[in-house]
Length: 122
Image 1 (cartoon, one colour):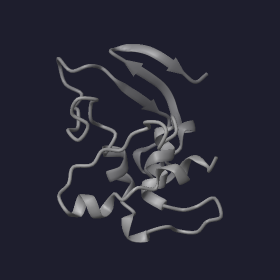
Image 2 (image 1 turned 90 degrees about the vertical axis):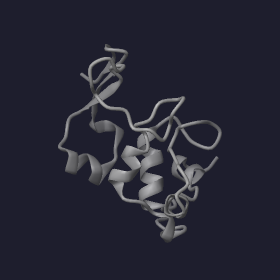
Image 3 (image 1 turned 120 degrees about the vertical axis):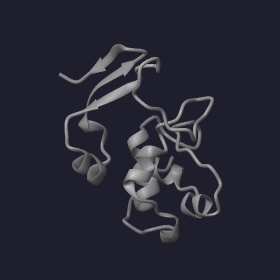
Image 4 (image 1 turned 180 degrees about the horizontal axis):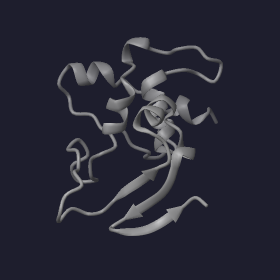
């Protein structure tokens, strides 16, 4: 089976440029369970050997991250942290610039779903 990033090299930039709503996901069998791998694939589009596939389809890291902000029923509509909204979020242990530069799951320190801590890194 190819590495996770290989299974996630779909057109993104050209769809966005055409005005087609796009959301990233970790749905199987086309993506692995790591959303950070999906983001890296959309941003870097590199093979395990370092070759870039479809460089025109790369998107900025901030765009890739924002493409995970939707909900299952409105995947392209970003959520906001406001009163009355579900408290689904991850707590990161790095600055926004570092997170966008690395797009790595090891920067996640905790995951909160519906306001409850469901995972934390010790």
